[in-house]
Each structure stands twice: as structure tokens, then as C-alpha cells.
Image 1 (cartoon, rainbow, N blue to C red):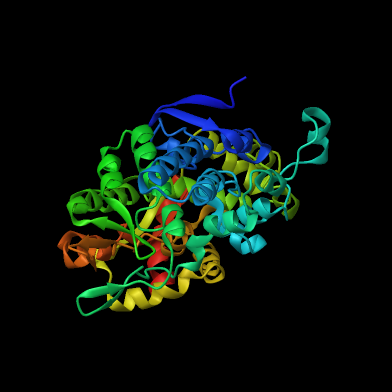
Image 2 (cartoon, rainbow, N blue to C red; image 1 turned 135 degrees about the vertical axis):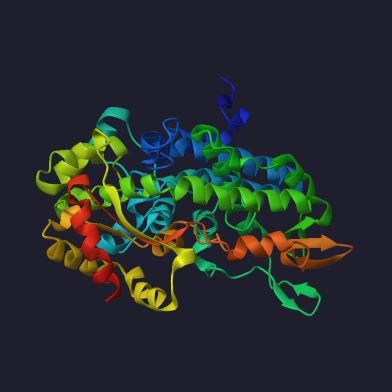
Length: 436
């Protein structure tokens, strides 16, 4: 038997998986991702968006393999980057980023924490009873070590996004020359302004949603990306391709990821989890979309009711929204505290009490916190541009990059939604509660 498989991917065509990566792909940590929608509940708005985290992980691995070959990186470094690319999402809970903030609040962990724990062997994402059926499952770090890979180094690459301050540039500009601190290019391949993760998800999500905004010129990026003084930079000739990726990312967040109806569906799912008994969350990192949905539907009460509404697409309706462009300074100051989860939930209860409805019928969405948890690199547009032996930030060459950095990815600052029959009563009190 050959030591590789050829997989036909809808976005990239032929993807070859060989060696230890074939073993990783067939492990339970990866196979669970077959049951997790890449875009959470976006399929309720974009019917074609039924692709999974496994497809995305495979695509990210494929792009990472091509980029490593293009950059002629050291073979061991290539292996570590390819492993990190394949494993970067293994800690995701069902419905991907949808439940990120709720889980972070309830359990104090996010998908990066769990991904790291799985890679280094501190968490086993399967039950002992599973081995009775499929046989012995060697620990993931043992598989990595067997291929000459250091699990800690692979885990560091996967979690590198957390260590990058939100909005921080990879460049430190002093006058005209940009200076670099250390060898960061391996981490930047996995999580940075031009990483392989977003190259795949932009192409894949655009393909499956039917939205044209995610088209990027990956071939041109590969031709112009290079390592310079330990960092990924782009030759000036690739400037247009970089601008294209920045535009695609910004427009996809506005038109798909933070589409109002998608957000309402996701917030209803969060409500169902919030209302569920704590024991339902115990195996959350073992669950798929289907298994968690079944548990919530059987939990009774608000959880069951909300899951039935989602099943039949009886979504809450927008009761009140405040566009960012219409927001005053006073309104902005009133909303800043609501980025905090507990304060936002207190406001939901107040709106429900004053409207005379159940707290389960009021959803208060302030999307800024969810954005920071799921997409820490969204503000990073200062890609290093190599021009005649000198590196300068993209913003010095591209007014478009500056505009994208200041452009919000969602066009509302706050949205309150409720069931259709409650919408009017909720609308009447929402403004008073939020801004009085």
C-alpha cells in the first residue's frame, strides 16, 4: 500500500496527504471535525454553507505545504508547520466560533486552550469505550514524537495567535525603516496578517456561501511571499494581491460572518447552551453539532424550545439596532461596559423584566467581544513590504490598507432581537434600558 492518499477537495483540487499527516488525519481528534460546521449556523442564511472544520483543516494543511515548499524552509520546520496547520482547529466546540464566548465564560477555556491540551497530551478527546470498538488509540504526542516532531513546538505554533496583542503590528516603524525583533515566520505562516488559515477559509467560505467577496490570488501571494530577517514579508510586486486579501477578509466579515440573521441564529444557540444544565457541557469538546443539538433538544425548558425554533428556522427578529455610523459619543460610552459578558446579561434581564417577557426571549448582541475572541488578527494590515532591500509597512504604500484597518467589520454597534410576537414590546424598552 502506498504511504499516501490523494483527496479530491472542492476548493483546491487534488490534495496529497502522506506520512505522519495521513496518520493524524485519520485520528479521532481530526475525524470529530467532520461533524462540526465550519460556519456554525450560517447555513440557515446561506444554504450551501454546510462545509466542515475537517475540510478547512485539510485545506489549511495543503496551503501550508505549498507555501513551505515555495519558501524553501528547513525540512523539520516544514513538518512542524504542516502538523500545526492540520491540527490547528482540533479543540473547536460544536458550531465552531458560535459558542466561543459562552464557553469561555462557563469553562474559562477556549478552543486554543483545548487544542494545545490535546496536542501535548493533557486532554484526550475520546472515551475509553471508543477504544473497545476501534482498538487502542496511541496518544497524539507519541505520534508526533514518533515522526521526530516536538508536540510543544507544534502546540506553540497553533496557539501563537493568542500571544499577539489585538491590533498590534508585526512591524515596529522608526522613520522609514521597519525593524524586526526575532524569527517569527513559522508562527506567521499559521497565524498572522497573511496566514494559511485565512487563505483557506476565505476561499472555502466564499465558495460554499456563494458570496464572491472571498476571492484571493493565492498563486501571486506565493510568488511574492518571502522570509526576510526572520519575518514573512511580501515583495512590492505582490502589493495588489495583499490588498485583495485584505479587502476579501473585510467584506466576508461584513457580508457573511457578521450577517445580522446569522448573528441572531448564533445568539439563539448561545441562549440554548446558557439555559442548559452544567452536565451538558462536560463532554463539549467531544461533541459534534449533532450530538450537542440532541442533548440540548432533550434538556427541556428554554434549551429545548430554542433548538426546536432553530430546527424549523423560526428565528428571532431584530427589535432594535444602532448603526455604528449613527452612534453618538454618549451612546458609545454606554455600550463599552456591555462588552463584558456579565454586564450584558444583566442588561438582557432588565430589558426582559421591563418588557414583561422571559429573559430567554431577549438577545442583546454587542459583537465586538465575539470578534476579538474569534479573530484576533482582523486589525492587522501592516504587512511588511520589501522594496529594494528595505522593509516598510503596507500602510505606507496603500491608502486602501489604512481604510480597511479603520473600517468596522460589522455595521451595527448593538442589536436587540426577540421572537416576532415580543418584538414590539422589547423595542419600546430597549433604548431606555441601554441609554438612560
